[in-house]
Length: 285
Image (cartoon, rainbow, N blue to C red; front, top):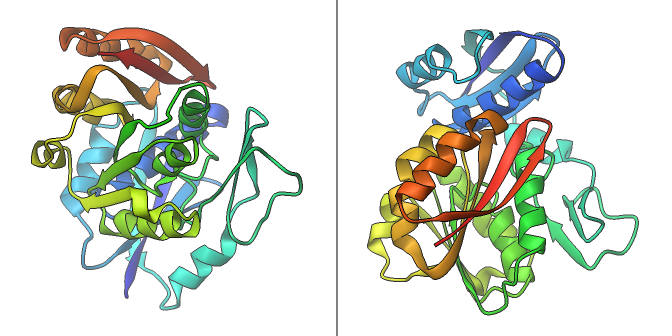
C-alpha cells in the first residue's frame, strides 16, 4: 500500500505540545491515519493515499479545540516500504495500572507477575495505555464489578477496554469503530488475549447502536469531546436500567459541558478522575 507522510508542526512547548499531539493523533485516527511518530517540531502522521481526506484534515486543524496553539502541516509521499513491519517492530514498553493490570505488546513482556495482563499489538500508541485517558478508563474498569455484565465499547480502537472488561469477568462485549484497521486490530488483539468468542466487533459509527436490540450494563467511550457530545443520546439509548457510562478523551475544563449533556439525558455523575489535565467521568443511568 502507498502512504502519505504528513508532517505536523505544532507551535507549543512542554505539556501543551504533548497534549496537542495526543489529541491530534486521536482525531486524525478517525479520518484514516494509521500511525504517528514524534518529531522535534510536532509529529508525523501516515495515511493511505486512497483514504486521505484533505477536507477532513483541514477542518481538524482549523477547528482544533485547544486554544492558543497553531498547527500547520506538509504532505509528501512516504517512502515505499513495509510500514506494517515497521510499526510492529516499534512496540511499547509494558505499562502498569494500579499495580494490578500490566499492558504490553508481543515484543516487550512483563518482568513481574500481575493479577491481570493484556497484550496489545498496535500501529500507534493511542489505545495501548500510554495515554492518560486509556489508563484512567482501565483504572475505572478495575474498580467496577463486571462479572456477567454486557459491555458496549464505542470507538474500540485496539480493543483494549473491551478486552480488559472480558478479563475482569464481563459476559460479552460489542465494539465498533469507524476505522477498518481498528476493527481488524481489535479482532487480532481479542484472539491474542483468548477472548474472541465473547468480543463481537463491527465497522461503523454510533449508528451501530440502533442495529442492536441489546441493552448494555456498561458503555465505554474514549473518543473526543465533540463526538461524545454528539453521540450522548445514542449512548443513553444503549444503556440498561442502572447501567453505567464511562467517558474519556477530553480535558478537565470540558467536564462541565460533558456533565450537563449527560444530565440532560437522565444520567448522574458518580465518579471523576483527572491526570495531566485529561479527564475521565462515570455516569449512572
